[in-house]
Image (cartoon, rainbow, N blue to C red; front, side):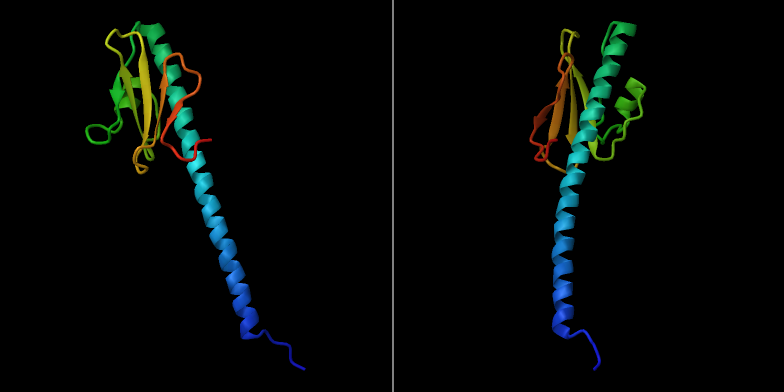
Length: 133
């Protein structure tokens, strides 16, 4: 007797593989979003530490804006850093008195998703990012 795979068995295997692939893609998307959020938080803390070092060296904070339209590398040049600007735009806003700043990371393709951190804050504030770590 010849053993062969029937069409029904083959379609069952294809359906099961399709379901598993769909679940894997959804999980991959969530993990990617969490990684991007962690990237922004790490870069905010790096900019925060750099601003504090610049304050010690020059007695002033550096203000910059990577809005992507004028100069997408403005913060890298101003802070002497190499921050990737593929997924996020970074800006540093110094208050009028010059004694405090707010660093903002805005997601390029996620609409209103952004993080902010101030001079003395320990953790960034999540503003609209759905999958925050």
